[in-house]
Length: 169
Image (cartoon, rainbow, N blue to C red; front, side, top):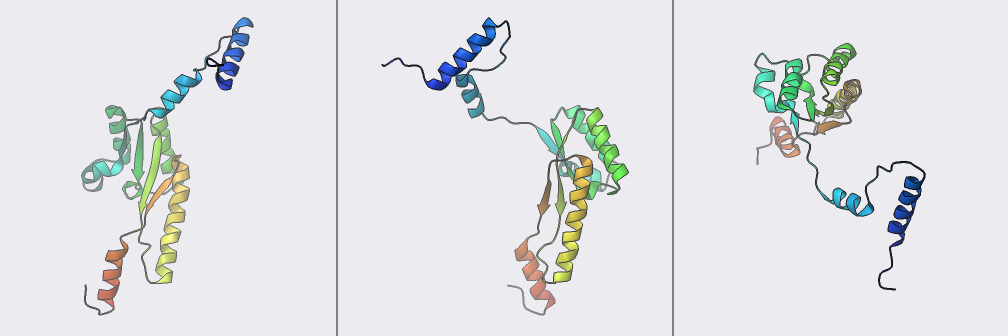
């Protein structure tokens, strides 16, 4: 038969019809609409704290100011770079989370800079401790993830050679 209904469309139509007959409203999209919608890209505008590097590191802007600026700009989320935080104290982090929550602004993530390209195992272990500390802080912020910048291994390699008396290449 040339005009056969695909099984999924038949099941959807039959279940929607049964729900309407029972006096219920069905608030679902058809399979064709749902498939088309998922094929469309979605872009949620956010802001990374690093965008305000000059103001956060040297200027008068605080993380609280940054959060309120993001609200003013109408973005959907902010990414916190940890070196702008004045503390990793849970009370401070929760206060930032509360400020963002009151203003309807989630933390989309957090970021930390590290140097995992250390030739010395003790220094690498220190970097891992630092990462663990900020994983916990990310949880207090309510962010979904912590991005870890591991360092530029080529630059670390050149520094290591220079420290050992090797000429830079």
